[in-house]
Length: 167
Image 1 (cartoon, rainbow, N blue to C red):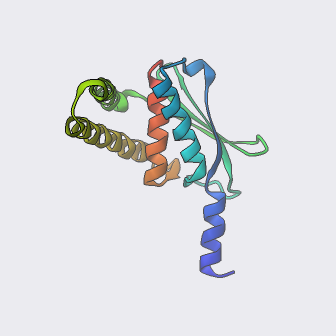
Image 2 (tube, one colour):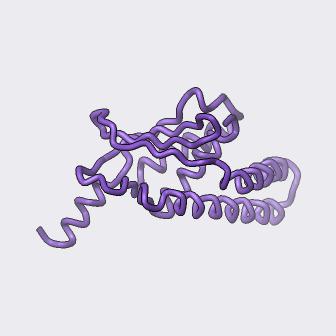
Image 3 (cartoon, rainbow, N blue to C red):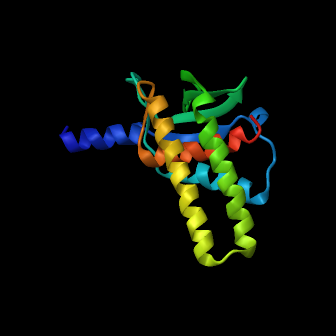
């Protein structure tokens, strides 16, 4: 097998094929937030790189995200339901970023109704900057546990935001 074929096979196995948010961790939100959540899950499944460190058997994987007792739970299984690993991360390091992100989102949704396009764009750029900061922090916190690329970390951070609204 060539190096290129081996890399393609690894890439095909190092991915998520299903993502669920623990129903007890979330609550119904506004249509905008529900849409953002659904799009993040769709985009995440469509294009991701996700590989639990040390799992030689490979995926594709199913992921369930939950907030339990102020901790973020990543429960990873194989498509057949066999457990792979559960990682628990403290939400403490994310609190400031999440607070800033929600404040900017509130400003963004308010601005859509009354602000000029350039004002909306400036707020959205700030929102994306804070979102990227959260994504980088998530990737750092997963180091040594789960390998993800930047796009996967961004989409996972969106889902963490959806969970944190209640959690």
